[in-house]
Length: 126
Image (tube, rainbow, N blue to C red; front, side, top):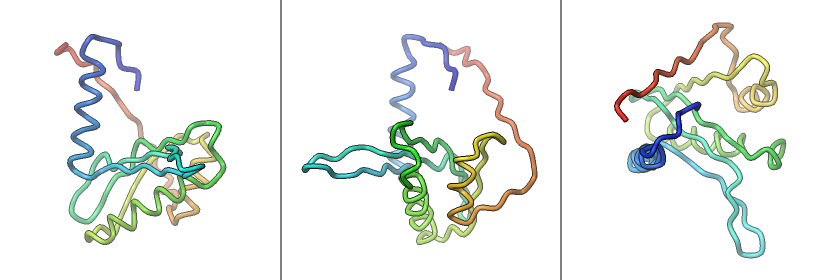
């Protein structure tokens, strides 16, 4: 996300992941090959209310893309959220990320036509 490499960066990232894990807000998809699990896709809910979540951080390694992994992962994450009373989800991606858009449409997302941006502020506390 463009963070400056500082002595605290790894610790801060670890703390963020541990917090997300403690809140059960992220998922990984693995495949098994010869008894070994291989991580193939990741996603998280980076915001949420009791009835809506925002999907963020969707990632599949480049060599593993176009195999349906992200689609399966997101569908499972959304089914889990639905079992907890969540019935709406939103996400955003760039206009030119056509592969991601196809994945999202494939699990029922619709384009709103709205444009959004992401602004990251430099952390001056390190």
